[in-house]
Amino acid sequence: MSKLRFASVWLGGCSGCHMSFLDLDEWLFDLAEAVDVVYSPVADVKTFPENVDVTLVEGAVANQDHLELIHTIRKNSRLVVSFGDCAVTGNVTAMRNPLGGADVVLDRAYKDAQLLRPQVPHDDGIVPPLIDHVVPVHAVIPVDLYIPGCPPPAKRIRAVLQAVIEGKSPEMIGREMLKYG
Amino acid sequence: MPRTLTINGQEISARSDQTILEAAREANIHIPTLCHLDGLTDVGACRMCLVEVSGSSKLLPACTTRVQEGMEVRTETERLRAYRRQIIELLFAERNHVCAVCVANGNCELQDAAIAVGMDHVRYDYLFPKLGLDLSHERFGMDHNRCILCTRCVRACDQLEGAHTIDVMGRGARSLIIHDMNVPWGEATTCTSCGKCVMACPTGALFKQGSTVAEMVRDADKLAFLRAARDRKVWNV
Image 1 (cartoon, chains in turn orange, yellow):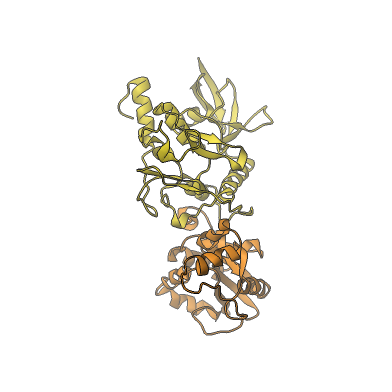
Image 2 (cartoon, rainbow over the protein chains, first blue to last red):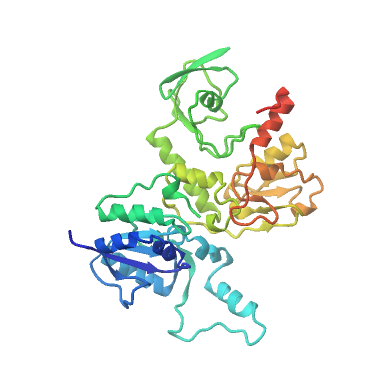
């Protein structure tokens, strides 16, 4: 059996989902037998490759870079998996939405709380511009599978990946697989 | 007068003053609920307990519909399952429910309901309304972001405590739980600080001050105990 081309990406999230992924411990060796990691925050790859079989997306879509990358991910991946609560619901990343658009949030972070020369960093290419409204991944592109959890427990990640490796669709039923938070 | 009816094809008998929900529970048939709480009157607000009844084109709330002779009730059909999931998704989309930072994480009836209906994601756009937090009461807090407007707190305050400090203001998705004539909770002179509203809340909307993520464990059964003790002099529920 040829190896699956596996990717994971980190959008607007805290990397906790990736930490939980690493919490798969020795099963990572089994995973390494079944997949080639072609793109990941834990691998030094600069551009998202083509012909990816499965991509885990951690985080919500919160800035311009995320927005561009997520379309590439969809175009180049057979299966896109919303990985964790931020990707599935917006979660903590989207808690800024009720405050208003990007400007309101940047002012709050960079100006309101600063006494000395308050200013929002604005030079082009320094940091990606925030989009006004943080959205879950499936609000931008079609998503094939959802793994809720903040973070999803390692057992849950394993159950999904095991099914994907075997070419089955995972049974997302019950507390073990579906509890948010 | 006893009534005979069927639920999911199973023949059961019930008293004529019982609701479909009560009759089903006595027969160990599970019907999901959110706004129902043992010890409080039912209002049929959340629509989670909708059932199909032969001869009726409308779906009927099991909590407020009385049993009738020969009634044929179905509680688990494709249509009902689809609506239940839809209801839960709409509740999540309507306000800002963030399980990860919620006092009720792990002890929440809305979270449990999402699991029960198999909600792997919400198909509707989240509204992200700007809603407030009332921490003016010395012992309790109210976070409107997490409120599903079930009115269990309203009924507990009115029917068990007899204070009726709490009520609902506005209409539809813009409704808000208020204290007295919409004053900060800490200034509501009719509030006795009994905490029954906090016990009644199914989510993290009402909580004890000082509780943090996943710390809010409540004992809503105490309210049913109070009701049984007062009405029927039954002291062990």
